Amino acid sequence: MEINTTSRRTFLTLPMAAALAACGGTRPTQTGSGGSSAATGGPGKLTYWYVSGQPTEGVRAGAVQRFNQANPNSQIATTTFQNDAYKTKIKTAIGAGQAPTIIWGWGGGGLRSYVQAGQVDDLTPWFDQNPAIKDRLFPSAFGAATVDGKIYALPCETCSPIIFYYNKKLFDQVGVQPPQEWGDILDLVKKFNTAKIAPITLGGQSRWTNMMWLEFLFDRIGGPELFQTIYDGQKDAWSNPAAIDALTKLQDLVKADGFVKGFSSITADSRADMALLHTGKAAMMLHGSWAYGSMKADAGDFVAGGNLGYMNFPTVAGGKGKPANAVGTPALYMAISAQATAEQKEIVKKFFTTEMNSDAQAKDWIGVNQVPIVKGADALFGTSADTPWRKFVYGLASDADSFQQSWDQALSPTAAEVLLDNLAKLFQLSISPQQFATSLNGVIGK
Image 1: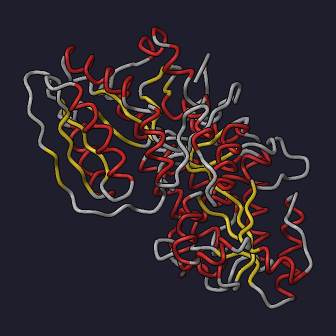
Image 2 (image 1 turned 90 degrees about the vertical axis):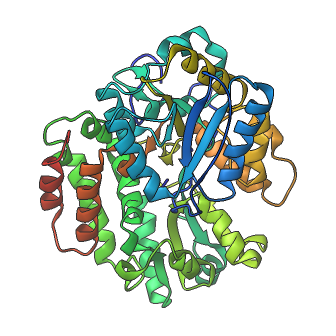
């Protein structure tokens, strides 16, 4: 899963006051050959690394090209890396105090580690001096840019909320309606199993797909505050009664044969999980907003024919989470290296002001069927067949009371790996909710 602050805005949950919308970042690993674009210039030359792979690479490169053309004496030199290579390279460079001038990333736990190491600048004063820049963006995008109440990165690009998808044709065939509450999902599981149709498709081998179910259950049962206690390092937070309830409900769904047989051997990167939905083998799926484009490419008739249904995740009776709460990727993020010169930092801020989240860039993102995190971007959607989808994503993000960042991005790499490993075991019923909580409590704050 690869889209956020105000007075003590929490990391993962931001009230959406004057909401706006932008979802960015795709969860699937992006691919492409690494490389660089040479830029010449004097002492004003900056470096900027980001992930390769079209079409997103082209949008990022376009912003740099526009800036370089307009500022011949203040050039930005870019270098691209494949997804996993970038994560390794940027971590090593920052640890050695040799980070690029502009540090692109996912915010969250990674950004927090950079802050703790003193390697990125505090941008709070800059935002305070330039309120129009902050006001232009989704309030929800600032949570993953905020550490201890201070903003250390510019939210940018797009957002990718997690969506509840369903096959309308199968729902009509079985004579059922989309779920409005958790109990409805369990009822649908029974009815689809009776009809010999897999209720829910899941790429369980990829592990992070499992996480999406628990993220929503934590939110719907305990509210966004539940995971916030984990992010804040509260002792034994995973053992909170609401957390155990969510873990138990998830295993109840597995025990009810809610997921397609063999889900633990199905991969998300191959889109095998999506194929089960659009070929009529499974009725429901929880996945990122990028799945819409993937299914459109793989099964255009299914999407164009109106057979793809989508909605936000249902509520849980008695739960604290609001129906409009979202989870996923609120945005992507750009920080400024603390090692940069004062002159370089000013040039980066000029780049942020003139190019990042600009109208030109928003149009580029919409052109590749993504939703920018810019207020009013919906006015640029046009009247294509994809407009209803774009408006849905925009509305979901803009109406959300909180937008919780995906846990493997919010947590440190150490904690995230323990999380993903134990999630696989939880879905395979090889550990209990209590055992899951004990394992995760052991890496809180690490």
